[in-house]
Amino acid sequence: MAPYQIRVFGDPVLKQVAKEITNVDDALVRLVDDMFETMYDAPGIGLAAPQVGVQKRLFVYDLGDEPGVLVNPVIKETDGEWLYEEGCLSVPGLSWEILRPNRVHLVGYDLDGNEIDLEVDELAGRLFQHEFDHLDGKLLLEHLDEDQRRDAMKILRDRAMAMPDVEPAPPKRRGLSLR
Image (cartoon, rainbow, N blue to C red):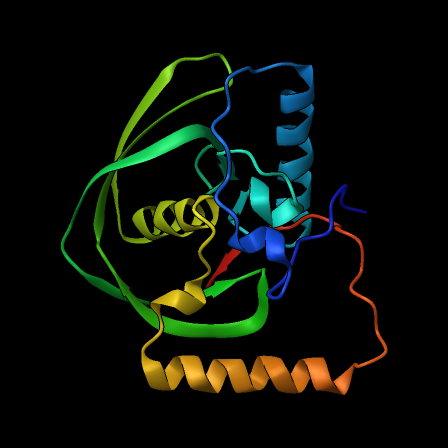
């Protein structure tokens, strides 16, 4: 069982801006390890700390090459456009074609304090932008046009009404699901 439960739409933690990390200690390394386990269990390819209820500016990812973590990432530059179907483990079961920049220049740090400077495009670029949004308290719903957002909110309200007596489960831990 994954160490964390992923927070889902409606949880106020997902709307908060995460705080910069000033110290990498054993607890942070443990958090990252647990986030990877949660992400893989989901399954997802990325997971931001706020999605597991931790207000820290970091996310983990694995696009199949080599797993990674970015601490205090900053998007320096974006370019182009790419329309792609995107989903999120914090908005389970729903996905939309979302237009985002295609190329992203991102800078952050690894757990050893080494600077990571990445220029990525397509799926990697989208993944990093998606996770970065979580650090700023944004969900992919904010990238929808007015009609898509109205339809999405109706679905989410209907789901909530279908389970009125169900209390939200405590955080389990999960991540990003791109389709």
